[in-house]
Image (cartoon, rainbow, N blue to C red; front, side, top):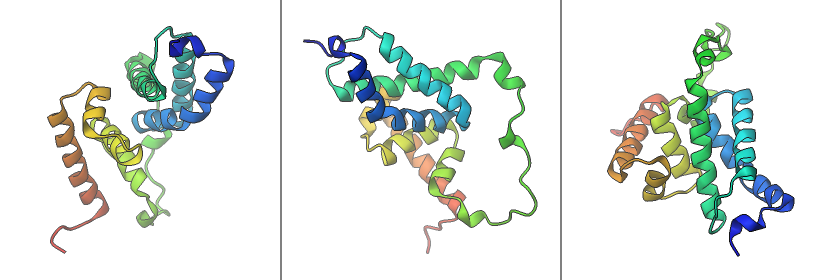
Length: 165
């Protein structure tokens, strides 16, 4: 029996509970906005409910969800109104907040450009291997490894780590 024939309401609820946090984090890495991220997550799971794809196992579904989230985010970037809006993140930092030491590593990762932040997230936070990430993101494995190396260097600079120490 194919996995798609098992997608009852209970199965969708199980998959949602199991993977909603991963889908949310992938979308948030790209969008960096809570409301839009929530919309993307909703749209991805609606697509899963309406999908007639035949999945082999839960790992296949997770990969499909990650690619769907990435594509939903990219579609959102294409909308003309996205570029016309003002975002709170674009506002200057308040002058009274001078404590930069409280930023977490995840905040630094989210500050990287998408081509670096998403691979870093999938590799270090979700535990994917480089060949799996390359397949999910549809890039060459060597390119992906290069992006991870560049991202590590950028993070070192952002955090202030010196290799000479």
